[in-house]
Image 1: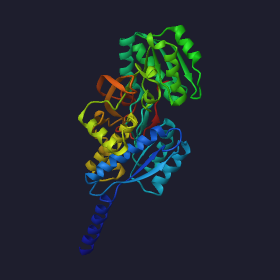
Image 2: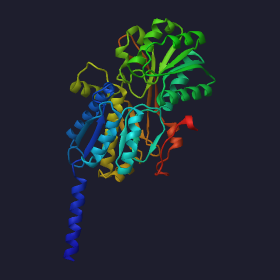
Image 3: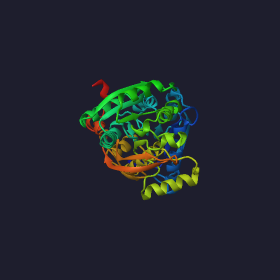
Image 4: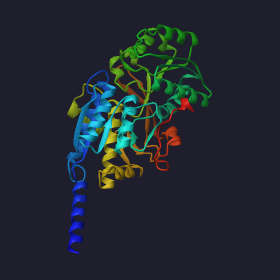
Length: 400
């Protein structure tokens, strides 16, 4: 009997030691290279969130440790550092990625290792994987409210300008689908390489087709040039321009006031959101990082991810992956800078507010409409990881 008690005591001690061990989070963001305008803010948000958690006593009685890696805006670094974080540094969770290609590089690795992974960026939608949790907005989530609003505001004729890869082409699909639902029409579209700098051919098409509004989805510095050329051509006087990603990389700071004023953007967060939690968040951010650069939506997506994971760890009373995933799938929610957010158990995407904001002539935004608790409808329809936990797929409406 004494041996049994000793063994049981040892087992309990081992379990207690594991549960109360220091939690390690892996953070893989683009701190250098062409994507660092996003990656630095993503990493800053993670640092701020963990700092606040540790100030409040940490998790399971221990401080949370960050193991940070610079992906250098290179896709192969995501594969390398995800393996390093899991195999060498033994992290409990990974927060990483901006582009869809980075997410798709990471997903198979965390699936095999059974490590919770949070992807925090607006994207084309459709990622479905037991270990993957998405805290950014999906394209259908943003487009569902934006296109309906824009048709009522401007009229039924639409032109699409988008980058020539998944984000652009799938977003365009949603424009067409929601246009059809509302009795509107896409009269023209252009899918353009990121290297294009001369938008005269596209502008000539727009002038010829006379749409009521353009859905512009510019990515990177070159494509932001479209907004300047659109304004210089005098089209803003008669044609509206809307976007789901304008401002996500602080494009409103780069473009001239004349080009940025009046552009309408639909996102899950703008710094101008007026609630008490956002005031606290902005104050803490500016005290730590200064006031020179506005906070982008991706930063709040990361802040939400960290705090949702922390809430799940507290609920599970463990950093064990299976226990944390089960807690996340209970529908965990938090009060966030962008309003209350809650995790949809089946799809691992967020129900969250979607804001429509209009660019002003001070390199900022004025929020003109709030849609509360918008569900990731497409992802919820396609992905039920509670009932089908082995699903590992990127659903795309273009392949259906």
